[in-house]
Length: 171
Image 1 (spheres, rainbow, N blue to C red):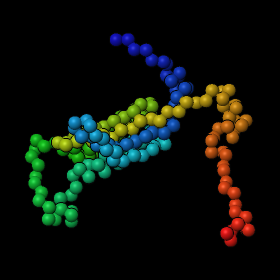
Image 2 (image 1 turned 90 degrees about the vertical axis):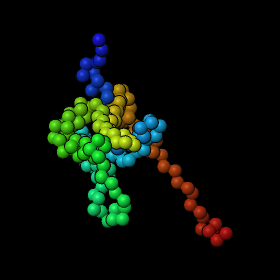
Image 3 (image 1 turned 60 degrees about the horizontal axis):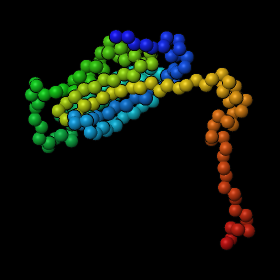
Image 4 (image 1 turned 90 degrees about the horizontal axis):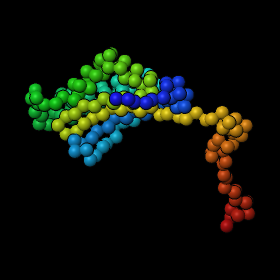
């Protein structure tokens, strides 16, 4: 199989990650609904990878809360059998693994997306990170923006409402 990709020097000079969009989602197993559970914008691959690890632990605690917690005092709880899926255990194991963390960090540092997903009886939970890419302006466009900063932002023009005249305030 032949795949054509531009050399790395061409890809990195045109588009480079400026940040990373991190999100935790839950999907129903039918594939019809997705719920966004958490988001984060990491400024570096390391911050995005740290968020992945912390969010995996947080999600594991939500999926398997402590049965001794006060709010479970009067709740009828049943012990799950050994064949029941344990996404909380998979999330904890992934977060505790240094090799998994390094793998995610290397993928993000290379500008690639990363995803880790676990499934239980009702839903699939995903931790995803996407690089947010930015086009660098062409040299000619960069010179124009440098000479005329007002052209670079639509927010440069501020509109103020006219003040009421002192004679109008009594009316």
